[in-house]
Length: 190
Image 1 (cartoon, rainbow, N blue to C red):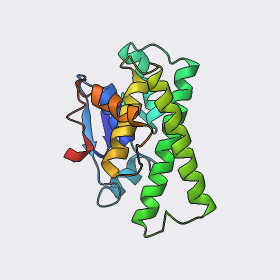
Image 2: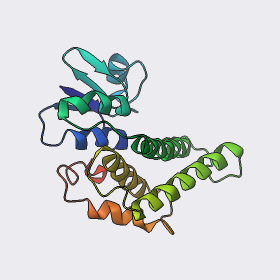
Image 3: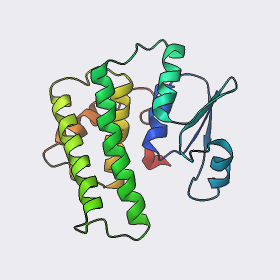
Image 4: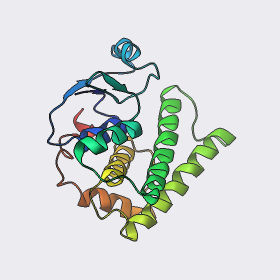
C-alpha cells in the first residue's frame, strides 16, 4: 500500500491517522513545487492524497476512507457522521481556497461575494461542529473525529480562523493528542 501526499495537508493527515500502526509507504510531495510532475503522473484530479493498493488507485481522501474501512474492520459511517464529514470538508475546502488565494496575492479580506461566501461557510460549519463537540458527538476516536482534529489543527497551524466562540474545537484537538500518530503527523513538523 502506498499513500501519496504531503505532510502539511489535512486531507493527507486524516488518512495517515486512519492508517496509524499499519504498514504502508508514504510518498511526501511538494505539490506546488518539484512534486507537481509526480502528482500529475499519479492523479489526474491533481489532488492529494492518493492511495495505491493492489493495483487499485484511489484519488480522494473520503473515497480512500471508504475503501480502507472494510480492510481496517471499521464500521460503516452513519448518515449523521456523513453529515459531519460534509461540514468538515466544506470548511476545509473553503479554507484551502482562502489560503491559495492569499498565496496568489489576492486580497481575501475584501468585501467580495466569493470571499464573503467562503468566510460564511467556514464559520457556519465551525460553529455547528463546535456545538456537536459540546454535545459529545465526537467522543469516540473514529474517522469523523480524525478528520475534525486534522482540520482544526491545520486551521490553527495556518492561522486561518479566529477560534473565539468556538474554543471547544481547540479543546477537542488538545484532548486527542495522545492517539497514535497525532504528534508524528503534526503539520508544524513538515
